[in-house]
Amino acid sequence: MPVRQYYQHQQVQGIKVGRFNQGINTQFIVYRMGSTVIDAGPSNQWRHVAKYLKKEPVEQLLLTHHHEDHSGNAHRIAKTFSITPKAPKLAQAKLASGYPTPLLQKIVWGSPRPVKTQTLADTEYLSDGTAVVPVHTPGHAKDLTCFHVPSEGYFFSGDLYIAKTIKMLRQDEDLNELINSLRKVQTLDFTTLFCPHGGVIENGKQALNLKLENILKLCKEVQELTNKGWSVPQIVQDLLGPEDATAKLTNGNFSKTNLIKQCALISV
Image (cartoon, rainbow, N blue to C red; front, side):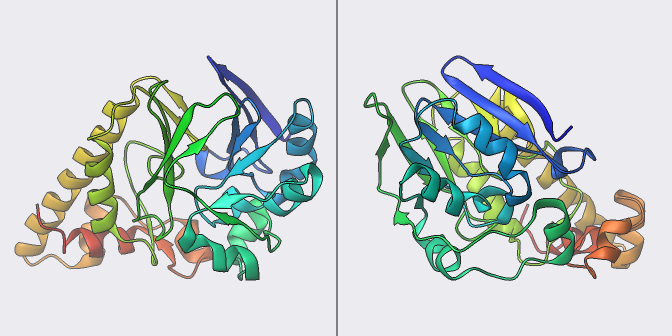
């Protein structure tokens, strides 16, 4: 059953979908506040997302970044509801032209269709006038932009959070920028975090801070072992365990080795 769960937290609703049920990295939550939808969900789950969204009017789609699990249905939502999605400026070229999707990601999420978007304004608004503030948080992706709703204490985290610990990193991710982004959002006032993979987290700010602490702790441990003359494979094995099938299936694009290599370069 691809629909895994429905969410209702105060003004926020959501639906969790996914072709597979192999943990948070294979499932996705499409959130909405009134007529505003946050991220489009994966294209291979369109049938379920469409049925859910059609229950109420959709007047606005805000995208956090271009990755296929977040933007996969943007084209269909735009066409179905006669709207132009809004996206970070850094995402617009890829969204408009399309981009190749690695095989494993294509299997899990499907591929997005090209879609024309508007650039996110400094402040967006819900239909009732509630302000939604885009917050650029690069690291996971250069264009990643979260959404802060100050009046409600909400933070839609895109892929900034996902989980309290990191065990793998993609080759195009920047750990230093991720750390800076986690520090940046600590200056914002919010309580509840809405993660499209991890769900609704009541103590969201604390969760993000814990993730930051765990990353810095791992960086310190990596550097201590590096200074003792340990090799990268030895450190990976000792701190994270052996590489799993994901690293092999992605030819090393998403791996523990990538994380350990970047940890060695972070100033702690």
